[in-house]
Length: 278
Length: 301
Image (cartoon, rainbow over all chains, first blue to last red; front, side):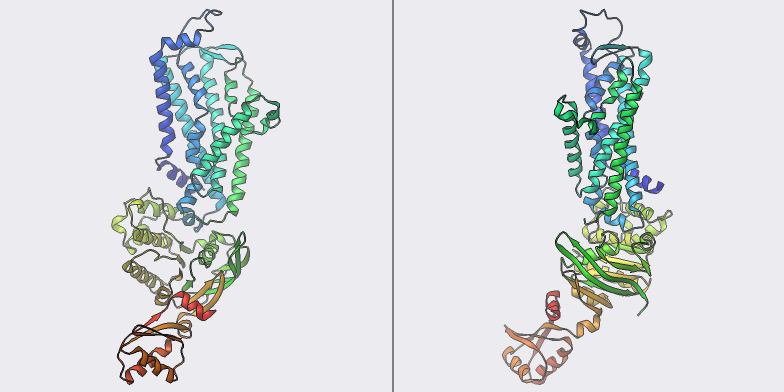
C-alpha cells in the first residue's frame, strides 16, 4: 500500500500541472498583498472610513493579520479550482492516457489503487493549503507587521493580536477539510470519467451551483441547504467571531469528513465495477 | 501439445444492446503461440481485456494456470505480461522511469537490472533516459512489449503488437515473439486482424467474428483445408482457364482479370495447377494466394 501511495505522489509531483495551483496562489497573494502595501494609507482610510465617526482607532490596523484575513476571504472561493485541477485528473488522466490498462493488468488491487489515489490527492490538498497559509500569513506579517484584527461580520469585533495565530491555524485546518471534501468529490467524478476536463468542470459547476443555493436566504432553498457540501465550506469564518463556537466548528468539520468518507466509498464501489475500455 | 494454460468457457459480454463477446470458449496450451484472429470490432480486445480482468464478463469462466480468474486475480496477473491495443505510457517520464513504476506495481523492488535487460531486448537501451513523448510509434510499441516482459511472465498476452509498424518493425516484433516463445518458453496469445501475421508466427489459432468463435485449431491444418482466392498470372489466361475447367482439379468461381485467372481453391491444389499449366506449354509468371480475413470468412460461413 505504501508503494502505491509513493507512486501516486511521484506521479503528482512530477507533473507540471501540479505546480499551477502553487504558482497561482503565490502570484495572487503577491499581487493582492503587494497592492495593499502600495496603497497603504488609502486602504487604511477605506477600511476605517465608516467606523471613524463612531470609534477612536489607535495602533497598526492594516497589519499582516488583516491582509491575510482579507486574502483568505476572497481566495477561499478560488482555491477549490486549484485543487481540482490536480485531483480531478487523478483517475480520468489515467483513463484518458490509457495507462489504466498498464496498471490494472498487473497484480494491483483496485481498492488499494483507489485508496492510494485518495491519500495522494489529500496529501496534495494539504501541501496546497500549507503553502497558502505560509505564503499568505508569512508574507502578510513580514510586509505589514503584527497587530489586532478588526473583523466585521454582523458586528465589529476587535480580536487581540495574542489570540490571532491559533485562530488562523484553526481556520486553515478547517479550510483543509473543506478543500479535501471538494477534492474527494472531484476524485469521484474523475473515477467515472474517461477524459480529464469533464470531472474538473463538473466539480466546479456543482460547487458554484451549491454555493449559490447555500448563500441565498430563500425558504425554497433552506430545506436542502443542510445537505449541501458548500453550506459547510465557509465555517472557518466562525473562528474569527469574538466568542468562538467551537462546538459548531467541530460539527461542521465532522460533516465535511462524512462527505469525504461517502465520496471515497462511492468511488471505491464504482471503480471496482468499472470496465476499463480506454 | 502441452497442458492447458488458459481455458475460457462460455464467455459473454455485452455493452448496452451490443453483444461484444458471445459464448466464447477456447483453450491455450503451454508453449503455444496462439493466434487470436478477427476483424476490427469482432470482440478480440474485449475478450483479452476480460482475460486480464480489465472488463467484467457477464457470463462465463476463465481459468489460467489452473486457477479461476475471479478468485485468484492477483496470483494469476503476477504471471501474465500484457500489451493491450496501444502503447500508452506516462509521456512526461523517461522510458526507464515508466518501467520502474510499472515494476513496482508488479511487486518488483530491485528492478534496475531487469529494466536494462528488457530495454536491451527490445533495442531501446540507448534511449532509456529519453522521455516517452519523444518516442516514435514503433519505439512505444517496443517499450510496450518491454513492460510486459518486466516481471518474467509465463504467459504473454499481446493485443495487436505490430499495429501501425512498418515492415521492418513488424519483422522485429515477429522475431522477438519467436525468441520469447522458443528460447524463454513463454506461452503467447497474439491478437491480430492480419491472417498472414498469425500464419507466420502462431502454431494454433482461433478466429472470431461478431464475438463468436468461428474456428479454432492448428494453424497449418486450418489454412490447408480452407479455400482462398488465388490469382495465376499467365501468358494466355483464356487458354489456361479452359485447361483448368477440363481438368479434375477442384475449384470454384473462376474469373479472368487481364492476364490472370482468379479462382477459389484449396491451397493444396496450387502445385497441381502450376504443373497443369507448365505441362501444356503455358508460361506461369506468378501465383498469388489472397489470404485476407474477409476471404477466409467466406469459406467459414
